[in-house]
Amino acid sequence: MSLNPITLTVIQAGLQQVCDEMDLAFSRAAFSPVIAEANDRSDGIYAASDGALIAQGSAGLPVFVGTMQYSTRTIIEMIAAGDVAEPSPGDIYIVNDPYLGGTHLMDVRFAKPFYRDGEIYCWLSNTGHWPDTGGAVPGGFSASATAVEQEGLRLPPVKLFKQGTLDKEIFSIIKSNIRVSDQRIGDVQAQAAALYVGETRLTALLDRYGDQSVSDAIEELSRRATRQMQDCLQDIPDGTYVAKAFVDSDGVVNKPLTIDLSVVKFGSNLVFDFSGSSPPCLGPMNSVRATTYSAVYLAMRHIFPHVPMNAGAFEPFDITGIENTFLDAQYPRPVSGCAAEVSQRIAEAVFAALVKALPDKVTAAPAGTSGNFALGGFDPDRDRDYVMYQISGGGYGGNARHDGLSNGCSTIGISKAPPIEIMEQAYPVLYHHYALHKGTGGAGKHRGGFGLDYEVELRRGQAKASFVMDHGRFGPQGALDGADGGLNKVTVHRGGAAYTPEHLSKEQDIPLCAGDRVHVQTPGGGGYGSPLDRKPDLVFEDVRLGRYSEQQAKNLFGVVIAGTPPNVDTDATQLLRAKMRAI
Image (cartoon, rainbow, N blue to C red; front, side):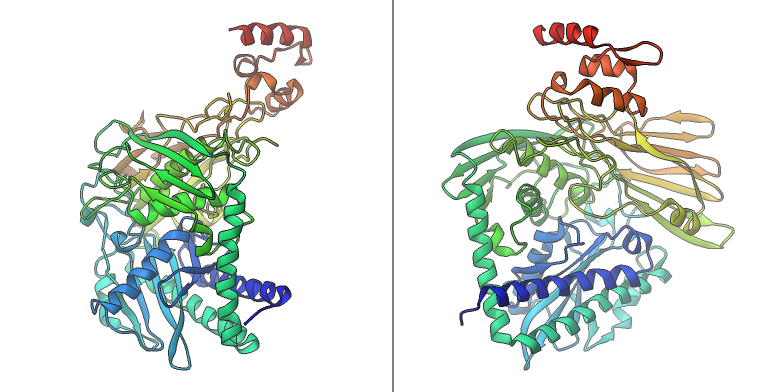
């Protein structure tokens, strides 16, 4: 059947709206701030035959674009092989096994077959970040785990809802293995409700336009996405583009991990070759295959954001060379840092490789860490346990047109940090300050954005803090002579003394008492272009706002600020910049 362009566009928008409404319903109904406020979740529609992505919510995390496709496909394959029970209308499968198309254990997936006339028409699936799934430390971010069992409860695909009814026996097993289990029912029901909303909205779309018309539109949209991506790739000259990115450490062995990327462009396809990357690591910074693939997809999505989000857009990409590296984790390798941290180093490598080929479209490296900070303990005033999960933003990289955004969300998502007022209401903590991390924007013609600086105090009781972050050893890469962004810094103030963790931004089970504080300063983005080409008045404005000191303006940008009131000394600036260029 041939569809006219207007009908095709309307159906495309309708599919997108189904996913967007699922996202909205999920966040509005969830109990946990990490979902309800931070929006650490995603919803999508997937093909009945192979789980290929049809549409994903625009407010969902980009890192789930490949993983949810992979996990849905795995469920379909396991059903066909007889390893998972056959579906019935109303069933909802739950799975968080990272080796079956997942990320880390806290990202829990629901998948629901969508029926039309007794046959599965497609699958509706979503992912939500649960604050805890058990394991060695509250929140699941075990910085020194050496096996996945230490990270939490691992679930293969099982039916949590059977013909619309929650299986209380399976749910009781889950509750018996996680912390603050009494609060999980709110997130579980919210996650299921989002799928029910999707079912209702998709039914209305099909009833209006007809099953065959929508199916034809889905196929055509996939073909067009492939062609659009191939057309975009024509802007990249044929050749080989190389880059490296580094993970600070794996949390156990205190030495960097290397992502060694070679991007080969030939015709209308790209080959991403990760041969030469570090071998599997002992600690939790291994990445499963689905997350590695998804990181490449989301990086290309950042570069070409107008290409529709479906499986067709990924067809021109071939990802290879990850076998026997830490980018293809196999059981029982720990993986808690894969989605939030390693995926962003992969994206950084893609940006660094392609920025010379596409200088008008690719930015310098962003902060590239989700700032995972978990605090678990007992609140004596409320007589209950809690697990607090804090994510935080950082600076974006500068680009050909403007400076990088300050305190932006992570590369892999659009989730935001929960409001501190909500956190202080929900948990026994007090934020002393919440501001920009001064001086962290990488110097450049267009500087990087600034990171975040916050300090949180435990007000009462006792707790244990754990964090898995990155860019504490190497700042986000600058581009085209731009400087690297500032580093991630974590300082723990405990018992009147301050210390920095051995692994800089990774540690677990730090005991805290009332009055102890954790100070987190996230990275800034890399600079784009030579700092000596930045307009002096822009440098002065940053100094006036307290983002850089006068000394940093001189050392980083060659801009001399003097006088009363202070202003740019034009002659001294020209002389200094001439000397710096000569050097």
